[in-house]
Each structure stands twice: as C-alpha cells, then as structure tokens.
Image 1 (cartoon, rainbow, N blue to C red):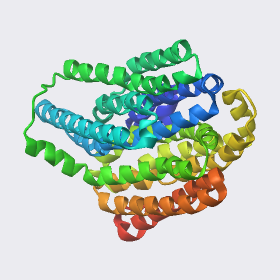
Image 2 (cartoon, one colour):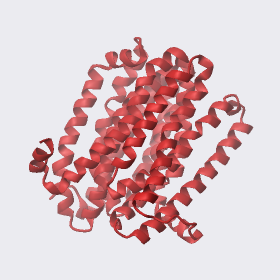
Image 3 (tube, rainbow, N blue to C red):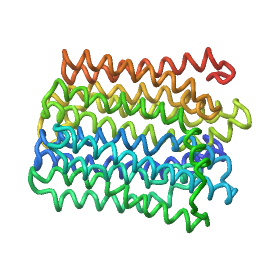
Image 4 (spheres, rainbow, N blue to C red):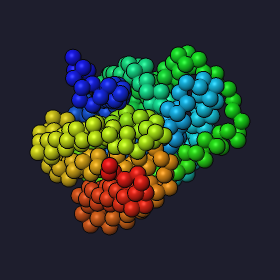
Length: 426
C-alpha cells in the first residue's frame, strides 16, 4: 500500500530509487547501528581510555579503506550502471576493479606493517593495528560498487545483516576485560569480510561473470579513471579522520574517547546521507545522458523530503543529546554531550551538497569537485591544528563545521558559475 502511494507522489519511474534506498539503508543500519548497540558495553568493559585508542586506530585504518576503494564506488559504479546488460564488459570490469583493489590492499598492508614495526608509538599497540587491518581487507572485498551500479542491493544486504549480528555477538561473548580491546578492532572488520566473500561469490553465480587475470594496461586504465574521485575521497577522509589524529597530539586518550562517542553517533546519521547518495547515483548517471531537466525533476521529487528528514533527525540529536549519550554510554558524560550538540549540525550541512556532488560526478566534472574537496581538506588541517591546540576537542568539532560549510558553499558556487548549464535551476 505504501508503495502505491509512493508511485503517485514521486512517479513510477522513481520507485526504484526508493527500493534501492531501503536496501542500502538496511545495509548501512547493520554497519553502524549495531556498533552503537555495543557502545555502552565497550565503554564499561574496556573503559573510555581504551575506547579512545580503538577510535584512533579505526580512524587510521579508514585512510587505507579509502585507498583500496580508490573512488571505484563512483567511477566503477557509473560504468556498471551504463553497461549493466553487457556481460562481457562487466566481466572485464569486475576483474579489473577486483585486481586493482587487491593490489592496493597489499600496498596498504605494506605501509601499515612498516609503520607498526618501525615507529615506537605504533609498535606499542602492534597487536591492535595488525588485527585492525581486517577493516581494510573486508572493505576491499565488499563489492558494493557493483551492486550499486546494478541497482540490486538486496543480495548483499541479507548476508551483511547476518555478518554484523555475528560481529555484535562476538563483542558480547569474547570481549570481557580491558586487555581485550584489540579484539574489538578485529571484529569491526569481520562483518565486511564475511559480506565481501558472500557478495563476491554471488556476483559470479548470479550474473554469470567470468573472473580472469586482466591485462596491466586495463587495470591501469581503471586507476586513471578513478583518480579524481580517489583524490577527492582521500581528501574527505583527511578532513573526516585527521581530526582524531590531530586531536591526539593535543589531548589525552580519555578526551579522544569523549570525542569518539560523539563522532560515532553523528557518523550513524551521516551514513543515512551516504545511503541516499548511493541510491540515487545510478539514476542520476543515466539521466545525465538524457537531459538535465530530468535530473532536476528527480531531485525535486526525492531530495527535498529527504533534506527535511535529515533536518528533523539532526535537530532531535541536538535537543536530546544528553539522553542519547546517557543511553549509549550508560552514564552522563557532559563532555560528549557538548561535542555531540556541536557536531549534530554537520549532517544538515553535508546534505545540502548532495545534489551538487551528484551532478558534478554524473557529468564527469570530477576536477571541479576534487579542487573544492582538496581545498577543504587543507582548510580543515590548518583550522584543526590551531583550534584543537587551543580548545581541545571543542576546537576539533568547530573545525569540522567550518570545513563542511566551506565545502558545501564552494560546490554550489562552482556549479552555478563554472558550469551554469548544469546548475540547480530549471
């Protein structure tokens, strides 16, 4: 019945967007809601200080997940969406992207191992770093880019749910004391690892693709194709995760733990934005080859209600921050509440740049997008270094908001004045 009413409101041609959003939402909910369920338990068992170390190492590993993803979630997804009925092309593309991701994963492990074995501050937590690399490996194997392009997320969603339930169970069953904190990092990667293996095998069976060793020139072409998206994604990772690294120079592990609590809650909201963006991206890519007016129509029908939803969620998070922190942490933590109220504004700011981001990538205007993101990353590092040194975690949170405002405003200006034929008007 709900689907029938939805067709009347947004038009039958866009119901697939809603369907993909639902499946992607289920995927991301298992990725981020279940870790939130474990938060009170972890804070009680391993303590806020060790939780700060886990947060720090997890942020470190996220840099390398960006390296292994290499922008394929945009560039390869676009290729799949445009050639979804060409089995020969998809077989070649799948082989090339998988090979590239595994090579990047091997390179990432070499860098991590070198740092851990040669730098004292890393070597001190060597077991946690090596176990935490499972996060990178799991992400490398997870073929979300292919399912997203095929607009078929349901096959990986069910297994992902099972994997994340397993991860949550492992946390409650095996993490029993403070010294068990390295296992938390191992279990973070377990869900994606299981999902990736299942998703990989399902692609070969369902779509009848042939996996073969591709020519080096073909792999290199995929790396070139994804370069600008990778660069922008890496810059996003810099201003998203470097915050914790920079804060670590000026604050204790306890303060990192406070920031990690607020950051994890806001990240759960931000994943809703990622879900929405992933759900509509294949449609925007196809509509870009037709006419710009059809893209604007899609955005009007599905984006405005979504933006309103994000605003309500962010406002609720700000108002009830104290209750949310108490519910998840199991106790009142004034520092985390203060940080959460500042960071709760970020999802609304980010949501405002989704249409621009989608249009720039759909029309292959990646250089303009990358320039803005690069400047935003530089601004964030400078601001974060200055503000966190003076105001600790509060300075870090404020630098996040200023950076997001700069990026959103700049993207709109670039689209409006540099590419006016694709502006958000019509």
